[in-house]
Length: 200
Image 1 (spheres, one colour):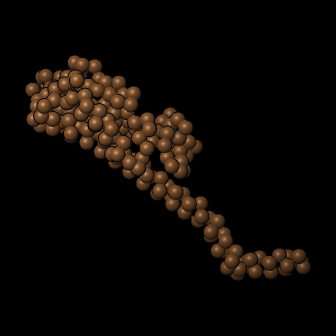
Image 2: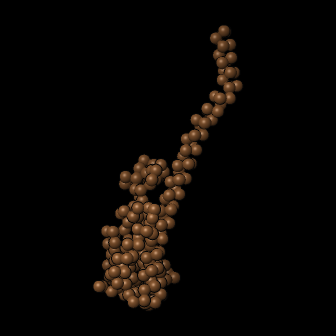
Image 3: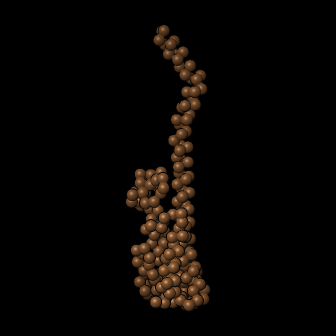
């Protein structure tokens, strides 16, 4: 009887003690708040890297599409060198870039005229077919295609890193916390149609 009264007294004190309630609330909310904070930072970084990869692909395709004399080897090397500043502050280590000139031969066939790769990205085979949106399949028109693959390694690894939320949801897409961000950009040749590749 005495023990029961003592237990009730202690229980009432615990329920009335606001410090205990605050500690319990913090213990319940803290993990969620940390997940939101770290997740927001990591997703923001990944979206910024994605935007830079997209910018590299579209910038290379856009510059080459404006060629008025043909693309020379020194000009191509300058474009490869421009990848690093375009990716800043992300490190460009491991980035693969490919540019190709594509000619629409018939309303149902677009073929590669020339292709160049950088960073281990193999060029497309000359005369190989390329898939383009239906609106671009106008016979006689040509396009410059820029393609980029970037191995993104998360800075924190909370959401996208090895053992993070992304790897729990998609087991096959990661290796050591790194996953590929890829983009393709297609630009209409503006002056020369198609843009020739000058080997010098």
